[in-house]
Picture (spheres, helix red, strand yellow):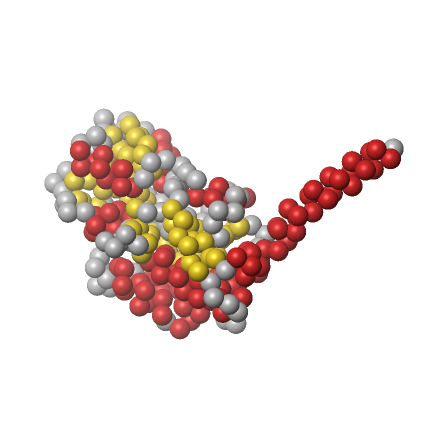
Length: 283
């Protein structure tokens, strides 16, 4: 019996540091290390990508940089921002494995993903669409027959694309790619006939490429974007939400929006004003 109790005590002692780390939370960890680690995807313009200077930039990066300032004020000390590249496949694991503190990019908030991570207030809304080379537009579902459609592996777009093709009995081949950049290259080389992703990501890829593309005006899904954080860390999530709400209440979010999307359209769709107003939570 004594041996069992000793073994149990040893197990508790071993577990204590891990439990203590989890209890400390992200804010305490940032205060201790002086580092705020932002996970981002390198080729998802205009949400997050590497600029001409090789530095992370984009709409979501702007939001996370504002959050970094809020975190610095919250912990009361200087905080160094570290940008950590992630992929569509490993981005949530990077959060779970404590490799990043926040996932900043084009991430759709879903209930199933909520089983693994938490999300901040909504930051953007878009939908899945299709892009082809200019002059090779796919104008109807019948045009999909026998075509190859590329889509990012392990994305919500892959799921809704397969579902749409199934429901419409459309005979098209789905080709999985590792990133949006890989999908665009496959499109340019003729390996696929169309590439499917969130419409805003397609716009960004067309914006940063020297080639001419055609993007469908319609979308076939609803994709609400948010920033992902670790589950059950209410203090850190609240700190991030407080910054986002302040941006929405003050109207500063409109300057950030214009910086990244005015080149696509001179007018802002009403859905964005509604999104910002609904998430402008008062103090």
